Amino acid sequence: MKFRNFIRVVIAVALVGIGIWWFTRSTTVALEKTAGATMPVRENAPKPVAPPQIAKPLAPVAQVKTEMASQPSVSTNATPDSADPQADLKTALPDIVRLQRTGDLVKLYQTYLQPNRLTPEFMQQLLDSLHRQQDSLAQADPDLQQRLLRIRQQIQEEAAQDVEDLESQTPTYNDAGDEATYVYTPRVLGEMSTEQEQKKFIKINGKWYLK
Image 1 (tube, helix red, strand yellow):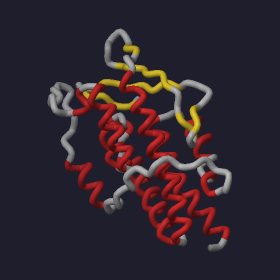
Image 2 (cartoon, helix red, strand yellow):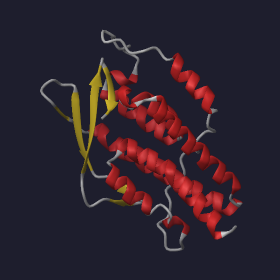
Image 3 (cartoon, one colour):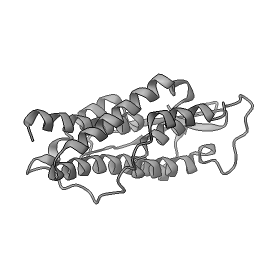
């Protein structure tokens, strides 16, 4: 494989990591971690974690748009279903972990991104990025594919573990009780960060979203 194609594939795979990190962590730390995402390709890279489930194939862009259009709008007087994981942080956190481990990034955004940020333009950019990454992986040789998949799997698993750490915590709520703040120490390619971060959730019409 030509060096130019190698770089192209590595960058494409890193885009998925950026998406996961951006959803669950601050932009600054996400970019720092993504910059090191090529490390497992080197001989002295940290050993990857046990691989979680590989991300399932992406749905066609048109199908995802149809699914978004068919979703009912959220009423200001809506009462959340007791079985809805978004109704309580104790059930929302494990649901986020599940989606991260399965690599279902589209469903993760559709469910937990604040509604006012879940625009058709945003979803189009996300889908285009994921499809470019998938196409680039398909063009890589088998050995490189395995290396890049391990990078992606490690990103997914670390993001899931970061959220799992929140499950045993009691967040700090604002006076209105509709904003919850967690403090945690993120993972960075197999190592714990030296700085703590905050993760905030906001409750809108009875449902919790990542702020």
